[in-house]
Image (cartoon, rainbow, N blue to C red; front, side):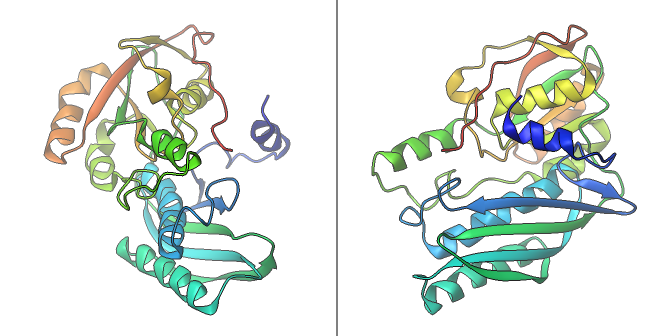
Length: 273
């Protein structure tokens, strides 16, 4: 068991298990974006850091077919950060939140040796998309293309400079596709830990396994922080799902069929550095 799974196993709550916790009519989610674990300051401008931190958090709401309403932001600021950098960072956080109709309503600020950002999103959905509900015979698919985030990360480690629109900096969120396809989907989650690891999470949540329809390379399966969507649906609604994908200009790759044998899963590994 990895350390994240160990921590989750020690917290006893019926609300744990999805991209966010559904409590009454609201959904609560939180992700950290930490220097040294998710990014290096020399790689990104403050505007890029603030934008990606907010995007990866709003991604959890979109993954559950929810509308992000409010955000609480905690900033751990290093001593060498300038007032201009703080303004650039906070402006980017606010602008990105507003782009999705979300308002920052509070948070906390502390001193630290590195730049750390933690965001709580409060969202709402009339029909949440969750991880439980998959059935044997269902199809598994992912949106977009996978692998670019890991490629960008590898290039950054080699000292290269990436274009501002590279996937590592600018994840693509699939809000329109998820909202329009929701009635056809049994399960879904965003791909943050890589297709292999996140597919295993959905399979484990439903005590099921998979049979590959198409080969998935390590380059695709082990690329983390993609924030594309992993979805599962009945094969009978395949045409409906493909129609929505076409209408929303969403590339969709069907890669596996769900089977009863819960020992059939991917091998995955942690992608954080």
